[in-house]
Length: 119
Length: 217
Image (cartoon, rainbow over all chains, first blue to last red; front, side):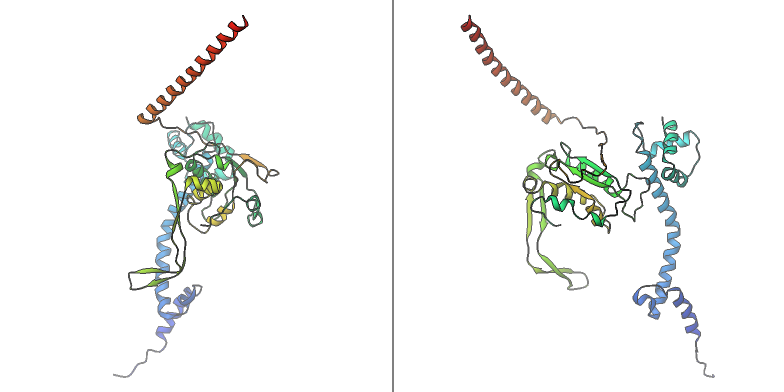
């Protein structure tokens, strides 16, 4: 068999990975083997966290809605749970993101609506 | 945790420059007659900024909390004598790996477990009691120290922040559970005793009063 050198095939492949990992810290952007490992880990995290992000933001919105609703001292049951229950009962179909944004930007509007809805 | 030996008013007012005070409210908590843990839990939510609709977990946006009358904070049960604060002295030099599974702390200076009861701590520095309670209720992350800086606790009702726009914090309504049967019996007994004592003193008083008009007459 004729002798075939590998040449720069491996290097071509690895430079692409290196570009991806170029902003990582320390050995994770310098050493060839760790670069390959870190790229895999980073992509795994990104994939998993794309779904986690949705969860995380929903939790944050719920928290914010609870905070703004709790300020309304007039009603007895001024909680997120009550607001949601009455929203569904009254067929007020808004998602959590919008309600949370309302709470930040137009807090008074949200409190007015909540007063009417929450029995 | 650093233990302050006595309360220092200057120290309580210092360090305001390190906090970005724009848009932060100054909430005043009155600890008089409040139960320690319940008050601390409310303070912790306010200091984290969790009662604001703009709460963000990676940013510290809590209000400045001023706690007054820290020496009048109450605890239930036998905690006045039985609650003990523990802390360990000695300085850790390094964590040594003796084998893959064992990590042993190597101490530079040998220290001991120290303890102090609630009563003694109140005598020494009543503000530390509330401060410990609140700090231990905050999440242990990088924002904890900044939140500590926003807490200003005073043993009495005097504080150097009179010129700031202060808002008193109204504690949420609380449902106190009914007394346990043994406690209730003890309370009834104590009440009866107090009534009897009053009757005795009234009896002697009435006797004296009767004597006086007789004398005058």
